[in-house]
Length: 161
Length: 362
Length: 112
Image (cartoon, rainbow over all chains, first blue to last red):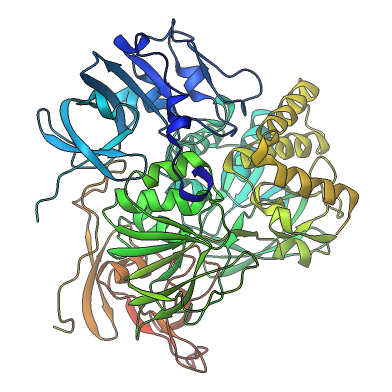
């Protein structure tokens, strides 16, 4: 699926998530399925929660005990493959990287998009953070229904015909 | 005739790094580039780079260019820069002919580093010469250097890293990417790039290619067709799509004309992108004191180009008799960086290509 | 006015890059018509921003040609600039008053 269509299977996605109890607190979900020479997620993490090692082709391994969901890895990943998630069982809050303008605004309702680029629900914009250290990658905090927690990938502005 | 110790042809990532390493050791160098500014292809790269910190991972390409240029600007008294200067000829006696400011200049150099990079491949299909059909680098140049949209609706041909990255950049510039076609049955670039573009709703069509472009003074439509496992067109699968631009991202070819001209031993190695110079493990060609590095020595990434430039800068400086205190440890570190970059699955193509070069097998 | 519609392909705002909107305007002529570009444009980029994609014609079949590589390799963008043929417009910076013409042959040298 990934090789032919460019998006992972549900099993692949779920393998990046810890138990639901763990994500009662915000945690980084690293959707890095392929060995490529790259390690900024590991070197940028302020809590040493991501391990790659000397062979930078290795797939990053995250220690959910150390991860605080701070989001630094989200804007450090050159592949924009990392997001932070937290859920209370009903509503899931994500922090996703976003590099398009105009940026979403707080309280706007956008479309929730899955890995295949399809609309799967609504996303409420909770916050948009654009800090200097983020180097032009905005961090958008969105709230979606917990039901789509594994499918959710990004947001898209609603278009009214 | 001018006389120089070290001339670096090409001011992209490999050439800039070679000059910086040489200058740091106190070695003078002249960089010659035909563009009006330095930085090579880095200046149009808006995405964050991969690799490790040593190769500026997570830094955007144009920021890396600025860093490399700042590095050599620190050594103004040692590094001369000629821009808008085209090297027209390289001779085996290490004479270089340059066209600059409407004048022809000749330089005899002790050591020459060829860091001329690469050029876009062309894809053969009917009407592939219509205006509006560009190489991917061209699309990036228009958008990211001159701030101009290369149309409003583009088709991307090729799903390697360049095709995937440029598709994303097109969307960032407000251009609709109608789809990415890939002749093979697999997406060939990094899957994280593919995922980024997929969640924007762009279709990646494998086993598909462009058959024909249609238009009078510029491209207006394209015809796509499916391919079978043996790259043959499948009858009755043609379909027409309206576009105002097509981006061809089907690979790069090392720019080695100057090397062949100088009588350097060349070999065709497809894994490295085409005709490349036969070199030793320090990137020296069969003509003594003519070195090659970066994409000109084999198509790879900017991260590798920078490390190769550092190796060649180091080796050339030592050969010129300039002392380098920690030569062995630096060389070892640079070689290790290259190995690490080439270690993973994506490095297998380069590793195979280099093995062929070593064995001189074709 | 030569063109049927005003085309402007310039990017004003970009999520990563900053394109200054106050650049100096440069006037030049294209096949006799007065047009404008901005400081920092090449001849080719200025024409492309105006929607002019055809820069030259192929020598024998007179097929329309435009940009392909944009880095001075392919020679698809050759035009006659200030009387000089075979100018690679993709790497030639735009200057005030340039006289730019579509090249349709191998290029002629004006006798002195």
